[in-house]
Length: 168
Image (tube, rainbow, N blue to C red; front, side):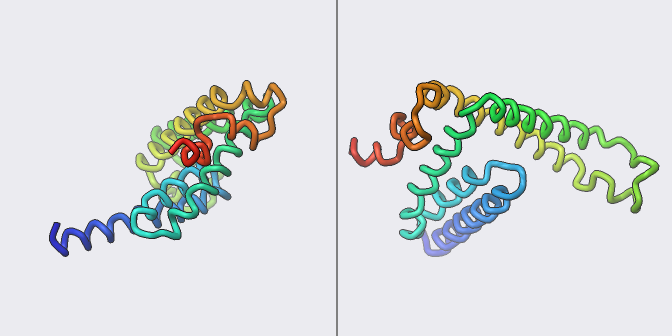
């Protein structure tokens, strides 16, 4: 690979990696899979930086513990399912894009700004949330019901990053 192509690849990887990390940080506060996006960004950045590789395991472990915690009780499971349903419904509403209601105080162009792209993103986020909830339920629910802590539930699965080193 020539130097120009290598430099372009490095710039694209950094752009994607940092975008995912920053979006993940924002999604820790806003709706969205923040730890998952941060982990994805660190995976990309770890191809270029050793510091990113060192931070992969703690972020992955915390994401798995959060997944186990999310299916610990039925109210959490139901709340997550309702949140995902709300995102999908909001995305559909955004795509349909009804006219601004009479009570809307600003110019109509600010009603549901973002259009089709925003609606599709909301639906994708809701579907991703459903997928993660199903994954967490199947992977961790039985263990947390048997009394395992989040840390024990993660340690007892193939998703535990420390098991990778022990096997290899």
